[in-house]
Amino acid sequence: MSDSGSTVALRIESPPRVVTIGLGRHGVREPVEQWLLPELCSVHLYDYRAEVRVDGVVHPIRPGSLSIIPAGTPMEFRYRGPSEHLYAHLRLPARGPAVPAPVIQDLGDEAAAIRSRLTAVITAGSARRSAELWAILWRAAVRGGRPDPAAAGDHPAVAEAVAYIEANLARTIRVDDIARASHLSASHLNRLFQQRFGSGVGHYLRRRRSDRVRHLLTETTQSIGSIAASVGIHDLQNFNNFCHAWLGDSPRRIRATSS
Image (cartoon, rainbow, N blue to C red; front, top):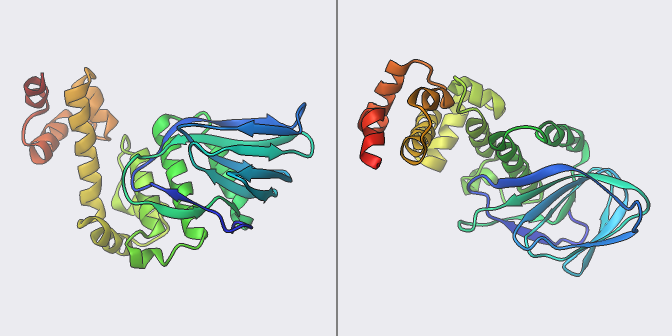
């Protein structure tokens, strides 16, 4: 939890767009640095001791601390020597309900696992980066003392499952794979999806695939075969059937009528 109790309101009903992610090295020449990201939220995972002043409030930094600093918020870091941290700069959705998360919190035993996940996605594609950061933001909100997420209809396993789906649409995945990634049984996850989205996991997966297919057919010149592969359907006849079932027509006709 944050030592000061300060919180940030996160709009994370849909995935963030990760603008950049990497390893920052600071405190080498200047013991004090001031930052302002006018339009981007920043997420830092620290491996050192220091202080950060966020919008006038001083927070101690310790190894394993995670900070989430909203766009347009002044930051002043006071280092005690060379200091490295993992960082990500995100563009969060502009609309939607907001959930509170501490500006800074101690991840404890989870820090090493989250550090590994962030490090792994530095060179990953944009979809995987977005999915991982989305899951981390939800975990930070839940760990930070939100009311019971199951009662609010925002169970963290749902966020994990949705993030997994978004990162793996190009693969042939099953409901059991999604449930395993969210650490629940398939039946339990289906019940949570019914509560949250009004349909089961399999229906949600097919709907997200159809959303992506419609976008790629109508907004890009990507080949139909490539589009099919990008949503995990490698047989063109199966893809044609999928488009008829979910979009109401063949992929060629959908593309032709959009031009």
